[in-house]
Amino acid sequence: MIRLSESRRSQMNEFHKSTYSHVNGDCVEVAEGAVTRVRDSRNRARATLAFPATEWRALLADIDSL
Image 1 (cartoon, helix red, strand yellow):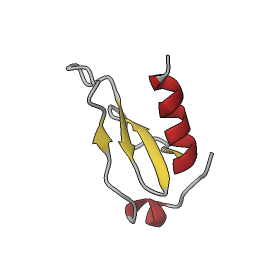
Image 2 (cartoon, one colour):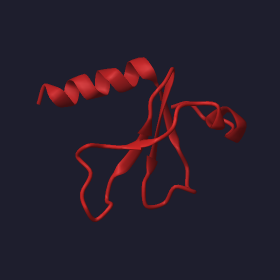
Image 3 (cartoon, one colour):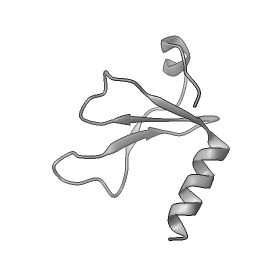
């Protein structure tokens, strides 16, 4: 996992919700770029997880193969 400074995070792509989001708002938001960031949509002020884009794509590919 990569930790990013606030100024670096603000320079990256904007967050978007998953197309699989529930109506009640229980979901995560993702900002994709060279580093993919993930946050809780209900608690945006809390920590943001960051992963190298290659690792994020590998995770999604593994999920799709299930």
